[in-house]
Length: 414
Image 1 (cartoon, rainbow, N blue to C red):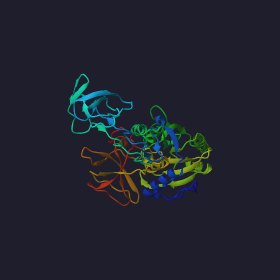
Image 2: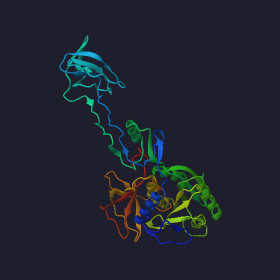
Image 3: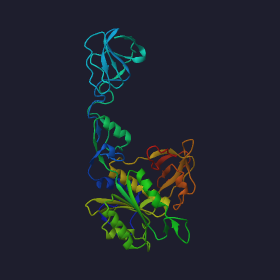
Image 4: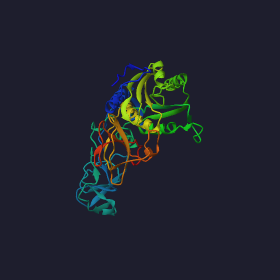
């Protein structure tokens, strides 16, 4: 594993085992995370809890009726003494044989022995009769949670459900880690950003897709620079602009090798970049890297160097960028799923093999076709990457780890 303080140099590096690379990426994310920010509930969606969410009060804070009906004391008949609506303070029922009309969600008065549902009660003038159900018809104090109880741990993604729970507990703001600001920089003179490929040039497939992937990984995409010409000066200028804009994560595509037009490593060296991981023992995905760069405002940006081949770039994204983002957000290390293979999947020698699989009707993983490192057709119909360890050939029936493709809330896994 390369140390985070290792200066970038335009030379080849020893490859890091895939699991070690992911651990190093997560640690780098944790190390570069900023302090928590108190954020209004209305603006907290998509952030991450920086501290546990604890109940600031009992929920409910007082007994509340779960039905419309009559709060009664003593045996029937009950004399009506008043009406209790939600949002008002209920006067006690002082004597046996009294009742008060009560609305759903209203405070149950002291000394109430039962609540008779409206449909089970008979009203005659100022008197009410009826039969209460055996079970109580109110919510007790602290039935949902007790004051001081931990409701959600730090590292929980803030969703509308979390916001609603926090509001119910009386919070106006939450201490969170904001979604990291991410920018994509696409290198390559051969790329087109519109129209049909031809004349020796191909469409940029990563510039339009990576922001959506990054959003699913917890980042806030803030723009794409595509394409950047294959010169060192253009690479340095694009990276410098991203750093000046306060970017937390830069994802680059292409230029990760050491050929005559691969300028990422020299650009990192010129800008004082430090490698976290420089080349990983995984296929596809060669070569990938993660580095850190200083921003003019004193912060530290992560840089995920993804290969130019599209499927390899997504392997790099899930291998290095996903754990780095989780660490930066304060979320747990991404845990793999498990899947049983329906067919054999060959290994890749000493490398970890990330093999695209779809999930069949039987729940098993089926290797997909069209999985060349430059192809995206297989990825578009996949559930994720089955992890085949170094030196292993997986057989049908083997249960293996699955790195799932990230999803937005509400998206259905394949």
